[in-house]
Image (tube, rainbow, N blue to C red):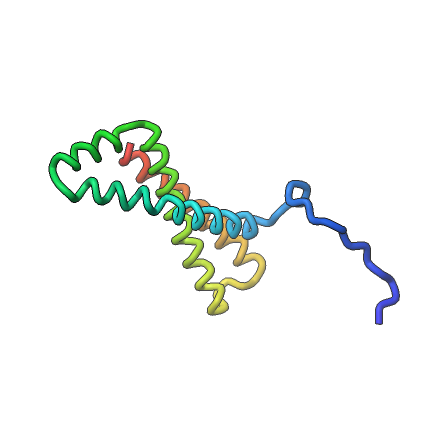
Length: 127
């Protein structure tokens, strides 16, 4: 047995350690899922407004035209895209594809890049 005791931290300060890209992508996956879950009633309400009647569709258009609502919808668009692509990455890792450190880091960077690029492209169309 190893007689030299290693010094371990008594607490883990997430603001002082440097997380790898995969760790940051994983935390963002959880945050995006939580945000999507919280905003689901709002999105369902907007869907109902858009489908009920021509008058409610006009109400939907006036709500969706507000700049803050557009920013919120772009944020939700990013959350959906990031959660989707990160979920695909996690499913691939579950079947042992891209498990090596270099591949895992590259796939996490790809998830971040693709989700941000698609958010930018679709966000410009939404605006």
